[in-house]
Image (cartoon, rainbow, N blue to C red; front, side):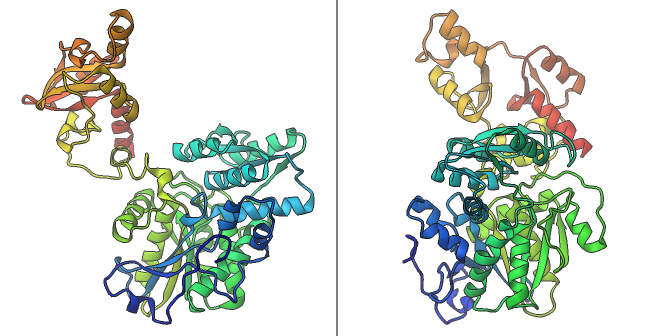
Length: 501
């Protein structure tokens, strides 16, 4: 056992032979006795001042995926979501901070500053907390709330900035981070996008691990680019040990990187929802010279592929993994001869539960296509018939109603009695009953709800809908006596946005 992580012995049998029941086969989680994870990780492991949690960075498992159609190829995925913060970025975050310590760029109790789309910030937050540094993170506003809350729980300061501006704008997250660093006495700008220790971490740890776990037999590696560290590090390592191994780029649609690989020019960037990969510029540490194939993957394909990866293989991964895995599947299916292909589960899916793993969020984005009626039913995000509506009964306590509204982040709930709509309860009704009416949270919902409700049939016009919304009320859609759901302003906005898209 090394660093508190159990060593698993691998069999000489081929993984597919072992995988007789069609289940995902664990290929390896160990560092073999003759292979070092690299000087960077060894530094952390041997430093008694570091908390033991940092010794668990790296040395992640590799599994074969057997429940997807992969053409003539065999597809393996390295579970970087098994790092302490659930992300591959733990590797380079620790390496960059310890390189800065060795160089004297950061002093005990000093301040680290970084621009991050999420996972690097989370990894730095863990390292900073473990080592006693202050940390300021500049984050684009498209990052999931789970990541932001995790970062703040580790004690980092977050500065949320715009995600709709490009490099050169003062509110662009990297430019803003550099400005903050320049104004912070004793501050150290980590600069993952230009820090040479970033790719070195992957060259010295991730690459050797894959090489050993794949028994020195790798034909292609599918990887994305955020800062470029992973791709460059793996490219450098496999360029030495297996020059014929192809480096394949997985890129979100809207990023300029896949276009640059294909056409050798920088095109116009767009926007994308996938977090952590894709760029509107080429980071200085990103070496794309060994990339021979690039796939551009749209948001819908990325997110649905990640969801399929969980259901079919049990791998709970984030949105960037969906991009990588979708590109890996395309690459495998494009081949005419057998190849052994590796890709990465970049981070954990638990950071995206409110987004890509939420059916309601996916439907709001237009990525899950529900039955369409071409009327107001299409605007209802939580349909009663789908079982997704949050409701209460007339005899429930007001505390029950309040808790359901709070947990589900809604401001009103329908009151249903054996499936029939009998009223609606919103936050102001509860407040009026508790504070002005001298009631209590033990009172029944029917004592505070509004039972004089105005409903709309599905065939009602948008003008009728707007009149209700503009009056400050929520629209209640009822179809031939059957409750369908509620329509709020955000539901209308989401519907109009999907129509434009």
